[in-house]
Length: 280
Image (tube, rainbow, N blue to C red; front, top):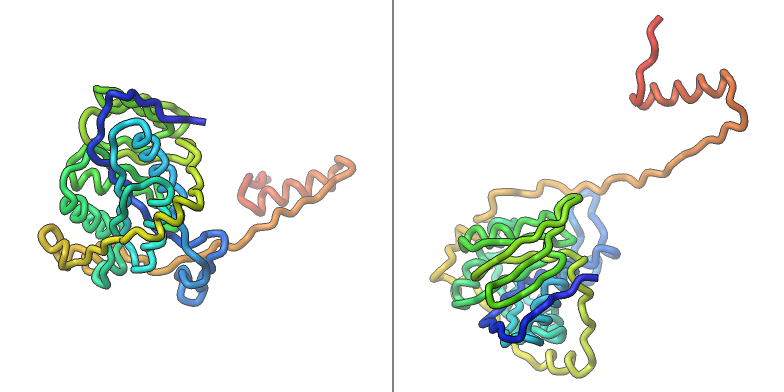
């Protein structure tokens, strides 16, 4: 298991953690007629990868002089996920919620998150999960970094911090890379980065009493236009979600290897396009 190594002399002003509320993917159903996810068919939870990002931020907070702000874009009920983030160690949560934000693709979502980050003011690091379990695109973290014109390190599996900045071990394909970040930047975390803590009863009770400010389009109007968010600001449209059929493996056992067996095996390979028949 990977862990964060910190040095006590490091001070952090603010860490922003991007949080998304997603359906429980083990229980959610798909509307095969409409070709969409029936989000009302299951409960919601904090995106599991975002919990790894939050845990990394809280570990920093425990050693360095840091504050952690959880930032979420979603419907009003997403307040629940922000309170869970607070129970897990965040200092505060901010919810971006407005009917105008509905239907945002990753691009419009990133533009809206960037507007909120600019509204929040200065920060040191932005943490996020490498992807979400409902969309699985892995785009928002990089888009936010690009729009803010800050460096990014993706797929972080371990992290070391000192006075010079951050050094991350990154897993890409079959390789492990060592990357260094000096100054502010974006980091996205994998499931291997840590094991997210579970909140205790005291932390849950404290979080339940916390007020979650809700920022709408009007509040962000200094940095966000209505045409840049929601359906209006989304260049991509999901026409249909298709659930692939469940494939069941079939097998056949040959007790003897003879001409009949070989002909049947050969015929099966040809029928599936694995090999071609020999022309005479």
